[in-house]
Length: 443
Image (cartoon, rainbow, N blue to C red; front, side, top):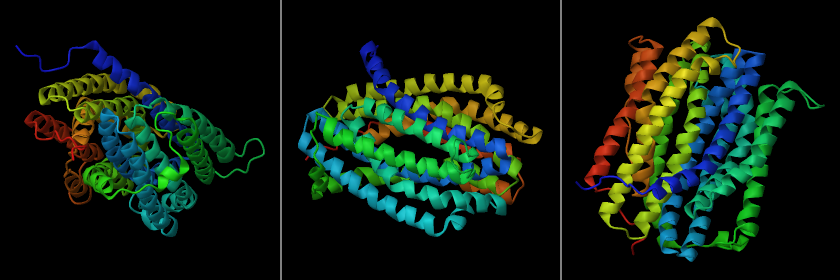
């Protein structure tokens, strides 16, 4: 019987080696948001809820930026398979310029209308006011953060994984120290509460961007990029980038909207439900660090295989193997989520009602993790690398359940997360069809 998956241990070893620096980078990023939430929760639940809701806006923005970045990384990975370095340099430039324009537009909207933006995620006047005060400062980090995400992704496309962790190992501890000092007014810093969290984030992202740019220009020897290379233009590569990137951006925009829909819908309910959901979601994001790292490694691996001109049956074997990795990894994360839920909740100062909601939402997230793992390594990693994407449709049903039919918050979140099950199943079917494989470097 013909093998349907890759059996060489080196294939899986390579994915793990590629994923480790990204996992560590993701862990550093999520840890800062988690610590901010815990520190502000020590002040009161309203500040914790406000920063969590305000960060949903950045999450959507950053996820869409990641769509642009992954689109560029997919192309670069395929050109990397052909060792065509001049095209890769040009893609670095094209991706950086396009994502910078997008970021400037979004940051301007958030700066001008922070309170209106906050109303998407809350109906509580106090939460809106506190969140708007955070956004007026945090919006200044959007552009450097967006360009950094593009440069990180481009480096991953040429298998330069370690730079992500190295840069973040500098910026995120600085972010955490500054947040602590300015939230509580320690070591001579002013006590700014939620605004202190925003100031720390802006300073850290500027440092991150500076260090990353220095690495790309001065230290990275594979491409030997120069500052003037960021002025490169190529209409064909720009069209290829948009052709690959726009479907991914569309998917990421809707996926991130679906992911934050729980925060948006619960944000129109009580602050207790908002706080409970945000605690559960913080644990989900912490667990997702591992699968996000594996996701990026899978995308680069299969993208390189496609770009090198490998036979279609070999590509499909790799795709099936990545789905298996997602299923196993997601199942393990689900078990860990269920077992560690109570310990995680204990780090927060919560009312009994908020704690009960947090436990219920964590149980839902645990149940969905096996499908989430397959969605991430199948639908997202594999189909991105082949140039595919898809839409989701459960948000309207969840909104109707919340505002028209008075469903339980647990049912509402279950409906939203059920979309992950659908994406995982559709992704498996789509991969089996073989129609997703497209060599994007072909003339």
